[in-house]
Image 1 (cartoon, rainbow, N blue to C red):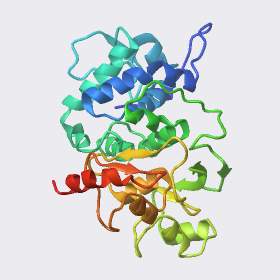
Image 2: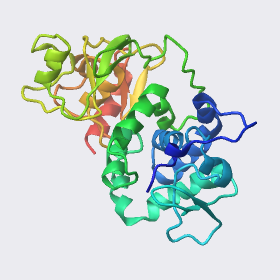
Image 3: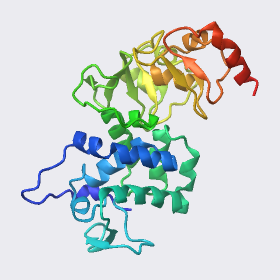
Length: 312
C-alpha cells in the first residue's frame, strides 16, 4: 500500500487542517473503531495523520480516503490517483468516517494483518512494528514514524477509550513535552522524569556513551537486569523514577499481558515502590483486572480481594 501522505496538495481557497484540529475531529471515531475491533485508537489516528497529511491530501479531500487504501476487492466508488504508478485506483468514500470504518474492516479481513490482533489495544508500539512488517506502507521508517506521531501528539491517551479529552500540544506541563534535542533523538518528560524512545540499533552500552551516563545508571533507572537487550520503541528513563505516579493517576487496572515492570515504566514509578504500595512480593505479577495503587499504599480492606484474584 502506498502512503497517500506523500501527496498532500490542497486546492486554492481551501484552508488547511492543523494536526490538532484533525485529532479533535476524528478521535471519537478512532475510539469507536478501537472498541469494535481492538485496533489502538492511537494507531488509527497516527495512520490517518500520516497517510492523509492531517486530512489535507488530495486523496483525502477528493475521495475521503484517509488511509491510502487501494481498490483491491472493492465494489464501491473509485478514485484514480498517481501513486507508485500513474492513475492507480483508490477506494472512494462518502465521508471520512466511512473511511475510518473501512480501514478497520480492511485490517480485520486481510489475512496478512491477522497476527496484529494478538496485540493489546494499548500496545501501539507492537502494532506500529507489525504494520510495517506486514507491508502496510513502502516506507522503511513507517513504524518509527507512527510511534513518533503517537508520542509527540499524546495519542496514546485515547487507547484508554476516552475521547472526551482535548489534546493541547502547546502545554508545557503535560506528561510528554519535548524538552531537549540531542544529535540523534529527542528527550521527553513523564512524571517529571526525562526519558528517550529507543531506536533500531540501540543497546545499553551505546546509549550509556551517547548520553554520557555511568554504565549502571540506565539499568538502575529502568529496573533492568544485566545483559538486557533494548527493544526499539520502548521507553528508557535517563533519570531515577519516582516513588509515586503524578497527580491524577491514582491507580491502574491491569490489562492482559501487562507486567509490573511495564506498568512501572508506563507511570515512571520505581518498581520496588510499586510492589510495596500494593503489598506484593517482588518478582510476582498481577492478574487481569487487578487494581494497582500508584500514589498511595493499597488500603488493607482491599488486600483480601487481591489475594482472591491471585488464586484464580
